[in-house]
Image 1 (tube, rainbow, N blue to C red):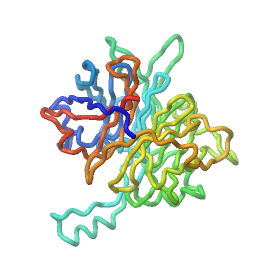
Image 2: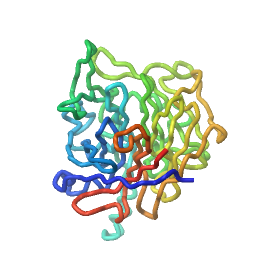
Image 3: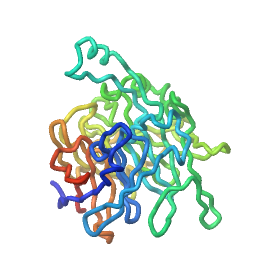
Amino acid sequence: MNANLRHVLLQFDPHLNRTEDGKEERGDLSVAVEIGDTLWVASDETVRLTRLVRQGEDAYASHAVFDIADFIDLPGKKDAEVDMEGLDYADGYLWMTGSHSLKRGKPDQDKKMRRNLEALSQVTTDSNRFLLARIPVVTEYGVPTLAVQAKDRGKRRTAALLRGNAKGNDLTEALAEDEHLAWSLKVPSKDNGLDIEGLAVSGTRVFLGLRGPVLRGYAVVLELELKEADTGELKLRKIGPKERKYRKHFLDLRGLGIREMCIDGDDLLLLAGPTMGLDGPAGVYRWQGGANPPGDEDTVVFEEQIVKMLDVPYGTGEDHAEGMTFSRRGGGERRSLLVVYDSPSPARMGAQASFIADAFDL
């Protein structure tokens, strides 16, 4: 069922590849988006973005790093991870979202039993996970880069984020009363709690894909519409039933959660995979009409409206597909879907901080 599969080299700088805690950024890639001849990626354990520049047909290099805190006021501490799980480019802005999730402590076989039991009882969050933001993209010396603000033909573009703080934002406040999802805000992501992992933007509409919760096999897409307040913050418009500030779409993905999304005309392409911390099959699905759902009510989308496009490689404990973007092959008109992986297999980790991504020609 796969389209033609190619491998694409992402060449990281060996020095910039190391994060402040000594980990390799290439080992935890969770997002990707192509802007012109650049590819933007990020690790879900950092507070920064990485830009790579196209080098010929199937390679990117020229590694540059952008600290998110240089462009927006983060909800929490500057060094607290964002858990970046969604990235998209639209109308001159780079959009991003954190997972908005809780996390449970993880046992370690090298620790004493008492310590491991304590870890499993601890539920915490990183304050910057409550991030939904945009940063203007400008061109310098022919290369896309980021700016706090920009002005094009008299129109001002500014960096902004959804109103909130270290404990939540307007979205989590709105979901706290939801009949389907309120409970999931109190449950860690690896326990089928709330876990935003997909982002797609079309005009003023923002679509958020949930890895969890999955309800009776149905994945969830939240549809938002944002406006800029006088304070410079972003606010949610009332677009749902009973003047709710969001719409819900429940998709029959046969138990899979959403890892990333891309808009293709009126359709929404979904990178779907296992929920929580499970291994298992992953694939790309086309939700027909998903980028422009009619009406203002919540919907249930049955499998007749969802077409499987291709299978994505996966492994046991490795190769978890998490980031997806449209890519122009060699910078030309031919399109591919480029996919990056968290917990990559050793075969993807080349010498001198390189990484092997997958591209599926369409």
